Length: 181
Ligand SMILES: [Zn+2]
Image (tube, rainbow, N blue to C red; front, side, top):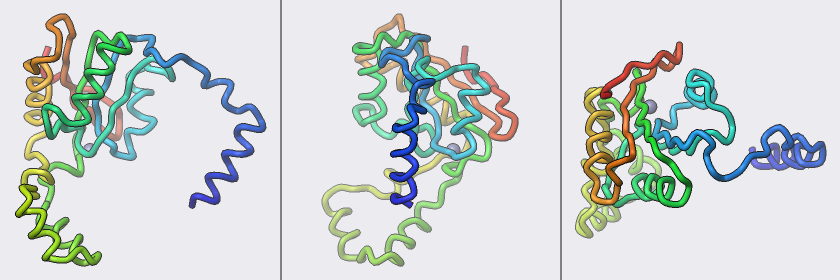
């Protein structure tokens, strides 16, 4: 796979195919979006929102979730606000998300099937890693988006003038439903 990508990349640069994508590092719409890494949203989400390259800071992970108030998602949002002039944040979950009712026990079993030993898992538990919480998903996407929005809004380092909204997208049509306003 990498060989294929590197070959394509060489031709991409040589043919100056990057020219339509030239933009600055500051988001022109002053907007940051936290959403899910779902493959169906890769092109659908920006297209359905009418945002183009250079408009937004896009943060993606499994489930559009903030698993820790001082983890990498919050850090990215803080950087987006204080270093990149972001004034508004959208948290966009979606229907049919893989993190809904996520089976963390099945994932643990698959780790073992891939050679991660029981001893290693027990050692990590002993070190304080709570796999059930760390690999947790959510039951209801609206509830998940709402709680992530609340976490951002009430975060001690988020200034009061930053607007935070939650939305849920249909991964087939791109239709948005507003969770909070
Ligand atoms: Zn998802």
